[in-house]
Length: 188
Image (cartoon, rainbow, N blue to C red; front, side):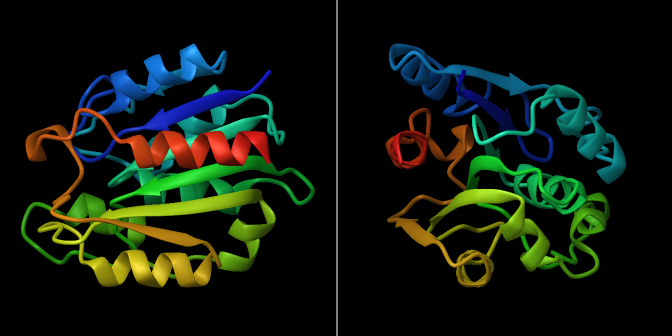
């Protein structure tokens, strides 16, 4: 059974922004989906978020797909780094995710997720398919982070014109590009 797990971002919530819409669209395609409630979203702790993903995603198979927004992206990448060799999920859609430290006041906890390099070889060996989606004018995470991420994952980068941070605050309650990317991965 195909399963999609969604991971929200810093100060986010499971049913914010486009996640409820995406769950509904996936249900129409007979794909099980759930949006995880990450612990202490206002004061995130990297190890707690990774553990939440690990405990929720019990079957690490090509039937599992992850989609993360903002801080959910480095959380997914850190999770993929710890998967045992030989285990691989089906795909990941990475939306508006920071890859480099933000270095702004009140973002120290976010920077803790990002501090230190990512093991992109291990990440790519833990997941079959990737897509990166980013607003072309994101005020929180520079487009250069998305370009770097898509280059290092050897995957498609979808830039959304005037997408800002692709969240509810920016008016994004649907994200068709995420649905299309997931369906393409699942049908591949």
